[in-house]
Image (cartoon, rainbow, N blue to C red):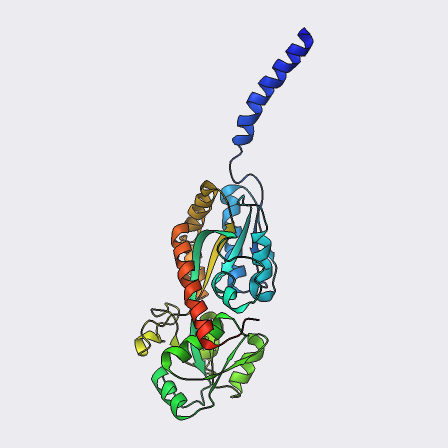
Amino acid sequence: MRIRQLAAAICTVAATFAVPAAQAETFPARPIRIVVGFPTGGAPDTLARIISEKISPSWGQPVVVDNKPGAGGNIGAEAVARSPGDGYTLALGTVGTHSINGAVYAKMPYDMVKDFTPVILLASTPNVLVVNPKVPAKNMQELIAMAKSKPGLTYGTPGIGTSLHVAGELFNSMAGVKIEHVPYKGRAMAIPDLLGGHITMMFDNLPSALPLVREGKLRALGVTSSKRSESAPDIPTLAEQGLNGFEAVSWFAVFAPAATPPDVVNKLNAEFNRIFKLPDVQAKLKTLALDPVLGTPEQLASFQRTEIAKWAKVVKDSGTTPQ
């Protein structure tokens, strides 16, 4: 009897010390994975790798970038939505995966809001309206006048539902014109037709289009942000040319799975704010025409709600049928 009582006492003491030890394991205690729903080399991948490079020395844990491209980023976002809410699996979300796709995909594999916890809005980049140099229009107003007097103008995009497609539809709506949408299977197929004069214009990400503009192969008529880009201050905004309130930027944010503890979210948010304020990171973003945004999880949540409502209306008004 005494042996059993002694054994029970030892187990009780061990359990007493084991619970605090488990609770004392502070985040992060193991590797973190950032899932990017797009191929390597693009802005989402670049931002994830900046985090990976800077966070590992600071926290002493490796950060793995896991590219899962496909379905407009939905494959990668779904993988995170189905992961435990512990902060060890994160999504590098975009304007597409977390605001537009819900309006253009008939069957979404995840809920853009309910399945995620906002962490931080990292950066944004303007799109830019570009035309073939042979197009007579030298500015946005001349293009609008041309579209109204000469039906048949076209704009190309990397596909239906992309941020560049909805930017074009927003332009049609606000400018009161009907420029025909020509979807391609990716930017790599659209640009040659624009350079060859087979389509009139295109909305393109500023970092991608800027080299062609600088070389004189394309003419930039305006950027789609609310203010001029520091990377191309000579290109006016569409808003300052008469489309008041026009804004259609590509943005990139970090989301954790739903039910991630607030203390973990706040720790991630604080670290990402620190990283993206570093001078070398700011310099790198500028060369990529990416503008840091940063802020709190609450600010990202509010911004996301606004973007979802905005693009749902644009898609509905355009008559685009969910795919």
